[in-house]
Every structure is written in structure tokens, then in C-alpha cells.
Amino acid sequence: MTDDNTSFRDDGTWQSFTPTVAFGSRDENQSTSSKTGGYRIIGNHCDWWATCNMIFKGTSTGPMTMTGLPQPALGGALFGVTVANATGINTDGQPLHALLSTDTVSFFKNQNTGEPTNVVTDEDVENAASFSLTGWYQIEDND
Image (cartoon, rainbow, N blue to C red; front, side, top):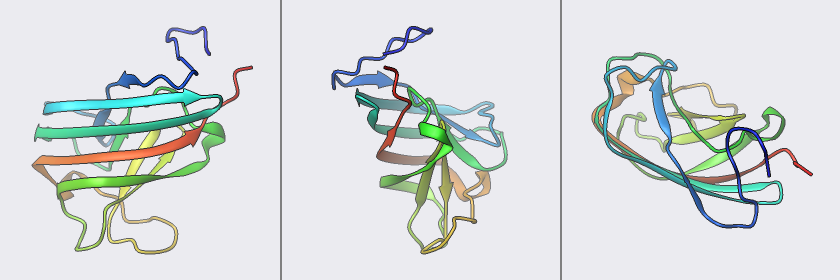
């Protein structure tokens, strides 16, 4: 557990968090019908899920990211994210992929194998886009 501005339970109890979706690290004029997330921490392991339903993606431009996870991932390692559902995001006919690094989820399109290089940007996302994600990652051991 931490003693900073936020208290985290590490007994496996599910807690809530609010994810933030941004384009180029900004979310100007964005409107959502819902942004919800949940997490549980057991030891140095964090399970999490997040859902975002946009009404208007806003006026920001650049790569699409999601932040707001309760604690950063261990050592800046990359952790795979499962995209459970996505609509309104153009991926050139390929599955949408996502990776977590530190405290940011990045989205990639048209990528079947290899190092992710084709980022999803505001130009790929419709105003009424939505997605659901789930994953896990390791966190710093606070003991």
C-alpha cells in the first residue's frame, strides 16, 4: 500500500478508476457518455479493465492514448492489453492492438506481428467510438 495522495488496497478488492482518453496528450472539447474502469491489486500484481464511450472525440489531434490507471507499471516494461471490444476506430481491416507502458495505453492498427509502429490517431477515430480493454501488469513492490 502507498501513503501518497491515493490509498490503494492490495487485498484483491475491486476499486474504481476513471480512464482518460486523449489525442496527442490532450482531450480538448471531448464529450463521453461513460468512462469507467476497475482494478484490483494483489501484492505487486494489478488486474484492470476500462470502458470508454465517446459522444464527440474532441478537437485534439495526434496519437490516441488512455491514462488514469491506478499505479504505473513496473520499470517501464511493455504489457499487452486485451481489446475486448472496439467500434468506430479504423484499423485498416486488422485487429486493434494496445500496449501499456508505465502509465499510458497506446493503440495500434494494421499490425499483425513485430514491433508496433502504426499508431491510431484522431483521424482514425469516429466521434461515437467506443472500446473496452482489460489487462494486468506488475507494479513496484511497496514492502
